[in-house]
Image (cartoon, rainbow over all chains, first blue to last red; front, top):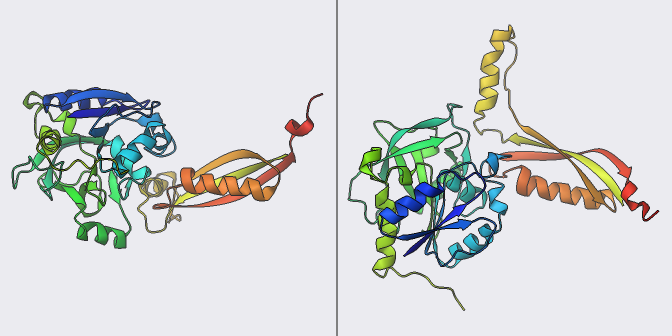
Length: 232
Length: 94
């Protein structure tokens, strides 16, 4: 199982993501954003940071990087994509997951530990999470307030595309609608979340709950959950 | 060829929480102003487009506004022509 971590100008969690992927048992390689080649990665991670300085809107300029065409093709073929924090913002701006990330309701950069409920365990990203377990991870973002118009939000809920919610006691750090911390695309192969699983990958750092997400992906690809291959 | 300068105004959609506007509004009493409400903060982008005519130039400006400057899910936009000039770049070799 190979994990590719995209490096945009301004990414700053790429090394952490590579490290966490290796801890989860994967081979991990960096992917420079100007080269539209995923180097055979089964999972592509768009890491946290401030791609293109967050100019104009967080995530919007990264959407036009050459590698994003390859990421889009990968997702269209059923490949796995995980967007973390700024990577979630890029996925949302690119239309690869539904919704938009607005300025935090507090107007502050929120960096703290939160707890996540896992809404579904039948996904490639969550199958290794024990039932009922809340995941402790940090958030660190200024624009993480998840938004969708009401009707679309109802559809998102009905179709089971909400994967993570902020849970008590820390609760919702940014004003996200329905406490949404992470979502899936319609096919369930692309996931975006604001909290940082790669910063919660070793007990020494305060939590290794984040590793469960990467372990899930490694297990999913190892034991024959069909990796949809390219048509034609 | 001619050059057309546009101003693209981008605003949060009505009903979308605008914490920047709210923060500005809440600070106004400190200036001794208490008659202001419904403050919304948006963004203005100015750009010059070379094109054969205004119709072509506007099409480019509208496309950029909808695909880049604004996120249609959360923002509205308007495109306003600021000025137009015959382009010196069409003068050809001297």
